[in-house]
Amino acid sequence: MSSQMRQVMRRTALLVSGRAAWVTAHRGKIVEGDMKGASDWQTCTACKQSQRGLATGATGRAAVETNINSKMASRFGVVQQGPPIEVFALNKAFLDDTFENKVNLGVGAYRTEEGKPWVLPVVRQVERDMAANETLNHEYLPVLGLDSFSAAATKMLLGSNVAIDEGRAFGIQTLSGTGALRVGAEFLARQLGYKTFYFSQPTWENHRLLFLNAGFNDPREYRYWDQNKRGLDFDGMIADLKNAPENSVIILHACAHNPTGSDPTQEQWKEIANVMKEKKLFPFLDCAYQGFASGDLEKDAWASRFFVEQGFELFVAQSFAKNFGLYNERVGNLTVVMSSKEAIAPVKSQLTLLVRGMYSNPPNHGGRIVSTVLNDPKLFEEWKTCIKTMADRILLMRDSLRNKLLELKTPGTWDHITQQIGMFSYTGLTTKQVEHLVNVYHIYLLKSGRINMCGLTTKNVEYVAKAIHDAVTKFP
Image 1: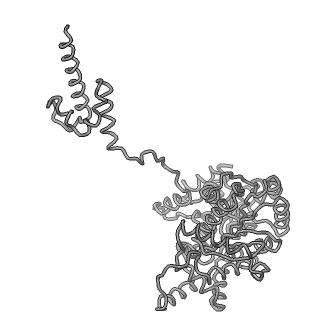
Image 2 (image 1 turned 90 degrees about the horizontal axis):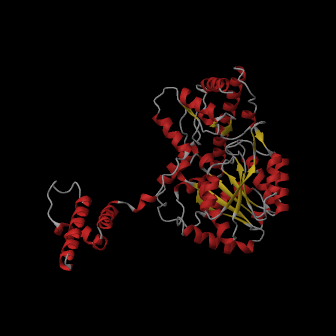
């Protein structure tokens, strides 16, 4: 065979291969049998970009197909589906449920005896006054928020405290308690280089995520809940704190521990402080329920104030979602206590830059409501009546549920329900028992067995007690 003949045959093979690749890549877009010839794939824009790959049949066909498919694929195709957030998924399931006697014990918000959200009367009044005040506007707040708000919030937390008197404490307005935790954590990671943090087992599920996203990379747990005695594992907690490396950040629940509702006693708090001082650990208190836990602002602030009195430098994240009912207004305060007031200016400057690059400045509406109430003696007293009302209803529901379970002779001990405080009760129910309550009785609660006591009413508490009795009896 002559060299000229071999060259013709090679060219023919390439044309056939290219045409086959074009037909494959454009299958479904041409009339069957309409073989327009090699020129089609040669002039096709997509195929033309892959001509180098057409040097051999199989390789050329794969190159064309890859090129065409790459135009249809999204760069976001690599993103993995994230897990659902349990409490929000649970709430949606409750809302979608058409069962008449369904009960929602999952969502972390106050509910009235009628099972409805409650806008505090003092909040309504302030909102009306604000709406009528034509001197107010919608200008940006300063980066660190309303000074009148943060100063009042810090004073409410610390009381008549030497740190305030000496000018060593200040606050900045944040996006609720979550924002205070995030801003504080990112400051500690960036400015002080802290990387290790401890959270209780169990804890609010967002603690771990917040600190990891803020730049910490060494998450650790300290023991907290004793399932057998349905209460605080104090010995385990102390042992873990004693083993913590220097400069570890310890997340502490200032009052009404979430999710267990089990708080240390004052004597236990003193021992916790002693260990942390000895080991040079940094306290970061999460105070989401001041006043809401017991109905007493002073009592609920005891742990925070004690740590300051002991000379600790610390952060406290405050939330006004629960105690003001301002869940969607995102009102929070990061209280900062230092040993020297000379450090305040540089610390504030770095917090300003951090917030500026994160959300620029906080919203006005909720912060101004809280500021108005905390700085007006009459409104302040009215607000304290409101938080006492909420706390008392929770205490009533704790008593009611425990009494119903005792009347039914439900297996196990239920004293922990009334020994715990705050919005939540860590019931000790198993995952199987929880599934039974959800699937059979349409009672929605977290898999951990945590229930929101506000979801109980005088109308449904007996139904819930009987359901728990059935679950515990069937799945011991």
